Length: 399
Image 1 (cartoon, one colour):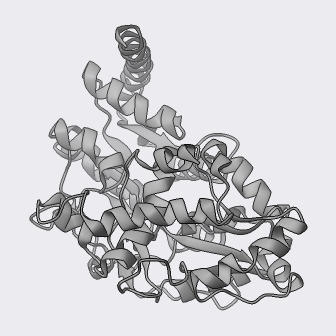
Image 2: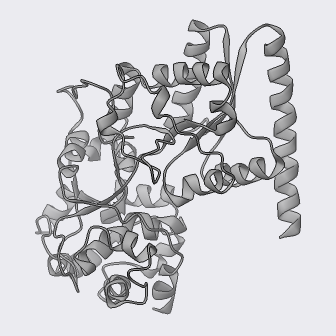
């Protein structure tokens, strides 16, 4: 553990030297430098878009330098911790409002309230949910609420097996014999990503077994316990799914890339994930893909047809950047560019967001079929049960 911590701090120090050199050169030329932690990599759409946008912005604004370090997935989160520990605090970061994204910045007292600096001629504040206890907005989200529990269905494959979209768990269970005979799994997911069990699956179940949209929030406040029947029954759903052959216990070993490949290649009828994976569904399959809420489940008390959601991630200033007027103004100018109508529309087409936060924005009529499916599911009852626990492996490994 000590060796790992030392390694992280050394990496952060190396990164800080790179930032310092770039900042010094730019400052000497009278430019404003915005030190940034960007999310993505050169092989995915998010990283490629980031590079393109930054290059275009800097060409149009030669007095501003977006001096960024780009990392993806767990490498990003590890570097956040290391950078904070070393005191090498960036000005602009990719973050969110939930524990996974905001906690390190919150614990270091580095979150910055953007409300006084948001251009209301561009952004619709009514579409940006409050993130702090006093209504603070800690980042400019990519879009409105991020639906974290979606059941992607290969409609053509389901129909070929003689079935329709399931309304109840029993409908799903009835597909098992035919699917198994064809060598197809029912539910696929990316269980190797530990957070997926909370964010993409149990967050959609707990509202059903409790009959409450905010059970998790009340449990966190001490009104309920995670040993209560409502939460135990949510966990029991996973056990029932495994016993009935609906969910393969080996799902805990499947990463995101493999899970998506299995769905794209017709190896699973359904894929349980978040709405953000819509753009990763094979373009041919997209025309035959429906996005559904979970069906009525065992032990369900209410909230039928609901989906869980979290506040969308995005880019936001830290206090270090926000308290420097020149850096703050430059960063906010960049974020307005980043959220232009053209780039927002592209994010919609790519399947990254549900709907924009821009004032007066209208979704184009020529969106792909799967994006229209996303618009439909966004009208489902929303719960705020975006939970992230590590308990879920126990049930699957036991079987």
